Length: 114
Length: 114
Image (cartoon, rainbow over all chains, first blue to last red; front, side):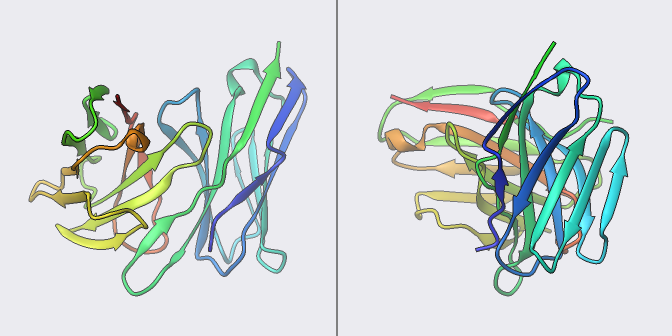
């Protein structure tokens, strides 16, 4: 399965600190996407990193991808209380002819304490 | 620009009933995917449609079906509802059916089966 597995399952930090979340997957991917979800609401797309990319930035977010280790990380710098949410990584690969899907793990629940 | 929209927001049904959930993708997007998210878990892939054709199906029973209309909106139908169908149903749209395709999610429909 391509399922992403996030680590840690829960993370609690003080406002202003950096938060790092890790993701592992099992087989080859075409890309990997990171999402944020606030309290049972819809998923917000954060970053897509392709298999031929090693690092990508977006504002306070930094994503790395190591395809040799089948792992990715999401770094949020200078965290804010508003960053409190669950974060999911979702590998994307072809599962059989013509079938494309994201496969999610259980996510990392981040709490940023003001 | 409007994002992905879903209706209804919340729905309460009883066991054995039928439900139809609706999704409108981002303007210009031709791909719609459906995911089910039960409490405490990550979303699970149900279907992907592209240009009105089913491109992928997850591991869900035949009680689940979907279709995509000429305007690229989509419906997810679930027959003979079970208590275990209670979940947040998420719709995602993408610009294509390819593997380098950012998926943007709607706010979801919260289905409760009593």
